[in-house]
Every structure is written in structure tokens, then in C-alpha cells.
Length: 264
Image (tube, rainbow, N blue to C red; front, side):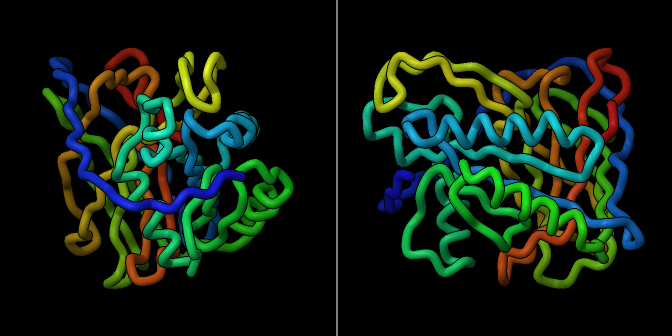
């Protein structure tokens, strides 16, 4: 396990690719109060960290096993490893900042990679398979009392139009919207993983926080460079900004025919 403190953070400006197609999508299936729970698994990783590939492989394994279940995996590539020989193409200071926020919520002295946080409450070394499986199981067994439903009405130019509806959220709750690339492969040319070819899943390319305007609303979501409706998706989750706890989540995937969304 590697441990590095964050000394500075810089803002990331996402430059979205131009899109000309207009896409209509369906709503995601909401997590209802009467259903069992969910698990939002946030991995903090880096291509510059030699301890990270096993964690990347673990979440890929969990992602493959959890199809159809309310398990939401998000991989954030932090940027503080970039100064040690290799610039991770997926890295962002925004994701390092998010990890530092979890250090505050969870009373940690420093951040490290690979780190996993489940439902904003439980953190551990990202390669610990047994701990991860136990945390996911605990999340799925706890009935959720907060409902969240997402609908992407369409996409045009550089943005997606997101509609949301929530129930049970308190005044401290915000909606975090992550735009993810489902899979990618990188050839690492330097640093601790120099010469290796690394595979990644559920790569967060953009994270946007929305202040809830009552129980429903609409927002424009920026789409990063390289966006492809066939291989990207959106995960939205409700988070209490006072303590970091995540109380609900939903997913919308984009269909390959550019007409209708596949829903999970």
C-alpha cells in the first residue's frame, strides 16, 4: 500500500467533445424504500502506483459478478502520483480533492492508494477482496429509505440533460453525478508500472455535484472528450455533505443504437 499526502490541488476544466446526435433515453430503475439496499464502491487509484493494479482487477471482477444488482463501482484516478514519473491520462485534481474530503469525513491522517470507500462510510485498502465483499454484502442487506430516479432526456452538443426525482433526502443531501467510461486499456511508459499494460473499468471521467431543487429538477451534465454512448454510462448517487454518507444511487446506460437507453 502506498501512502502520499496531498499538498496541492488544482482545478480541472473538462473539455467536452462535440456531439451532433440527439438521443432519447429512459429512466433508471429507482431504489425503493421497500427494496433491499445498495453499495456504492468508490476506488481511488492511479496508473503510477504499483500497488493499484490488483485493486483495479478486483473491482473489475466485482463489476462482472454484480450485473443486475444495485452495486455501483466508480474508479477515480487521482493526480498526485503524476509527479513521480508517469502522468495518468484519466487523473484529475478533482478526484484527489474528493479523496481528501473522505479523509476529513473518516478522520484519516492522510490519503493513500489504492483505497476503497463503500457508501461513504467504510474505507479500506482497495485490494482487500474479503473486506470489499463484506462491505458490499452489508450495504445490500440494509434497506434503503431514500429513493432516487434519474432520466436523461437527451444529449446535444457538449451536454446531457438530466432529470432527477428523489424522496427521503434531507437538507444536507446533494446529488453527485458521475460520467463514466466503462472500460479502457493503457500502456504505461514510465513510473512504477512502466512497461505494463493496465486494464481499467468504471473510470470516472467527470463528477458533477448538483444542489437539489426540491424533490425534482433538471440539470445540464458536461460530457468529457471522447464520450461514446456505446461505452459510457452515468451513475448518480445521493450524498450527505455533512458526514459523507451515501443514501441512494441509480444508473443509466446508453444504448448502442443512439435511440434508447439500456437501463440497469
